[in-house]
Amino acid sequence: MIRFSRAMSYAAFFVGAVPLAVPQAYGDETCNSPYVTKLIKGQEDYVYVWALGVEGLGDGSDKMVTVDVNPKSKNYGKVIQQVSVGSRGEAHHMGFSDDRRTLWAGGLENSRIHVFDIAADPGRPRLVNTIANLAEKTGYVGPHTYYALPGRMLVQALSNAKDKGGVTGMALYNNKGDFIASYAMPVDGGGDGYGYDLAVNPRKNVLLTSSFTGYNNYMRSLGEVVKDPEAMKRFGNTMVLWDLKAMKPQKVFSVPGAPLEIRWSLKPGDNWAVAATALTSKIWLVKQDAKGEWQAKDVATIGDPAKIPLPVDISITRDGKGLWVNTFMDGKTRYFDLSKNWDKGGADNEQLLRGFTWNGKELKQVFEVDFTREKLGRAHHMKLGSKTLRTAYTTPETSRQLALNR
Image (cartoon, rainbow, N blue to C red):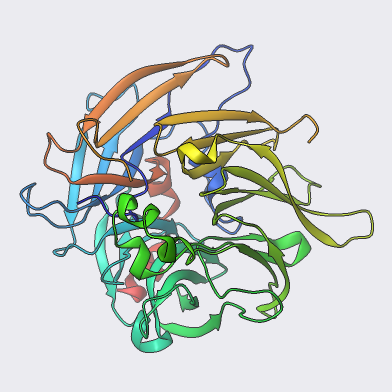
């Protein structure tokens, strides 16, 4: 069965050089926390893919798969390592720690959080910790977003252990995996208590969160959910603006249709973020008005919501002028010019990692990894890695720190 939480059947990204007349294309680096250091400059060497375990494929467990994506490498486009976590927990999203030494990844079903060391050898991640106390410490389940803060990791959950509904919250850990605090999503002032993604604008001391649905919904097949009127009522319709330093909600926005991924513009001086709604297929803009008050409004239509294109992931360009939107049900990626005014199933259930080049007008595929054929599971989420990061971790000071952390 393809559960609702399996929101992507294949992953794609852009690699290689483009003509000099075309601005350089940036990848997943624009989607990290602004506190993540050691951003990759130039050609990336690896892509880490967090894959769902599938019974009968390999050991059937969730795993971190590393693919070589440097066009000059002899292993270009090939899997060079896989690390099984020994369980199947509905692998979903992941995120780097602020020092980029570790990559945190978790499961929506078993609520385990797995921490991989990528500092010692970026091409060969190593599982160093499994955090299993999210529900015990907070009452929340379904860890979704892993967002780096200085020396800490803020984890957004999707559900709760009491009734498996959508009312949930966030958990804060230090980089060693020790629990620090929890923060409930607001249920007053227009809040529905739901959560999904989170993103920070440090210059404005703002944390922005979005909302989705609980365990009882996301562990069902999409086909069942859309035919169940009661289940369709149990989706989030809000975004929340928080005081980052105080970790207190300041304003609740009405954003109908389950707003998912959030992306702040990285252009210096910009004060806005965008999000896409899964069920109403809209792009929403969150921005300060002339009086300095934060407002939210829908600014574009992604597709016909009656056809449920289901936008599941968005990636903003570094200059804040463009937005890529991936829609799950129709298998398309759409590009929106922001500089102007303002569960899949069947025979095509592919599980592919594909690399593309982009010349400013069209995509050209350059490699493909079939996760089903190679018995790796379901490719879901990915992050980029580079060989150059290894030297960044091997100074005497960082070597001593690594030894202390072990």
